[in-house]
Image (cartoon, rainbow, N blue to C red; front, side, top):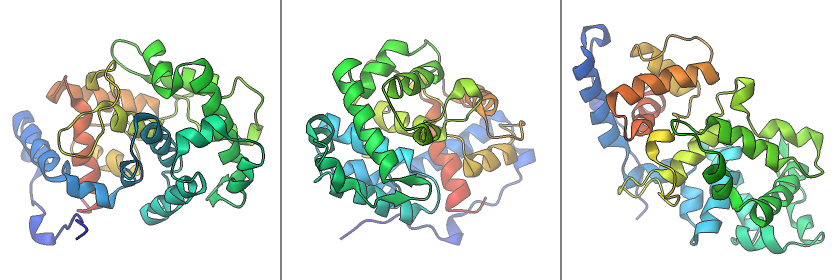
Length: 273
């Protein structure tokens, strides 16, 4: 039987946020992490797509492609991500590394909002370039990771991704924190790859990067909840807001601060906090 994350209104906790001291706020967030960071979460989230596959590179590529189209309705994201992987015969690494021009025709007609089949073809070609010349997705981050964050490494990922001939229209589909983007989708992908939560959600495949270097995936849900909890004052969801939120979350847990993504996201999406 498929396990689904079920939220009912009786689970919602009525609290006076302004009355909480720092320790109480941390305890509140920890309780929400415990509630949402479970295997049941997988079935409600786009992370279910890479969970469908086996093998490090297959999981990396499926996770990356899924994360890169993760905007809009969650059902549509999941359906279209599975569509991508199906077109690659559920072996995305083999498809990326060994595709021919005619194989790329399998991607014709794909579309997710503004990300279309031409963008997907460019992503496949650029991913092959990364794996052939830069040690793959993990290799880029191992090379450019800074001690306290991965935002410069995200910038370099985009640089290497598009250092080969490419479609100009596709460039917009990879964010760049150095241009003040929150880079929500790539930060989410990095959480998937780096955190080893022992709960069956995040994969923990990348061993040379520490969870402490991760940044919280900041979107409208996590941003709004963070502001209501007093963790974020900046109004825009941009790179500066990511830094502010990271600082707040790392004060609660400097080893694994991005675990609070489960709390912020869960409160926003499932509990209308």
